[in-house]
Amino acid sequence: MELTKNIFFNTDKLVENTVVKISYTGKFFIDSVEEVYIHYGFGVNWDNVEEKKMEKTELGFQTEIQLQSSETLNLCFRDNNNNWDNNDSANYIFQIEKKEQSLVVQEEDLSIAPARRLRRSYIWSKKIRLAVYKIITYVPRIISGNYKRKLTDN
Image (cartoon, rainbow, N blue to C red):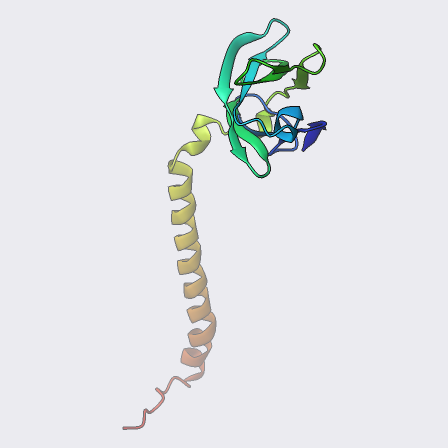
């Protein structure tokens, strides 16, 4: 996903408490700078600021970061000579979405007891079907007297 020119993410949307891979192909990549660092924080006040060295690839400089529970992800980049790419002093700011509750697995859903009950009921349903099949097949033969065994060839 490209949210801003020269910055790409490996996902369609940024979701809180997930890991996201960031690719940067901005001015430092175009100028063939050897080392680029991502400087990032969360929210309006740039909470939990961190800086991380990015890996240079043929697709740009790349790294993975852990998104926190916040409204925004704020980014800027610097090279090893302390030159900054901060979107003309506006920084790169991206919205972080809240995790949908329907996608979150609750702990009580992880219990094995319902699975065992389901397995037992499945086994009983097979036994009942087999019994019904035998009754339908063999009771009429017994009543009619046509219950001879088939002879096998020796």
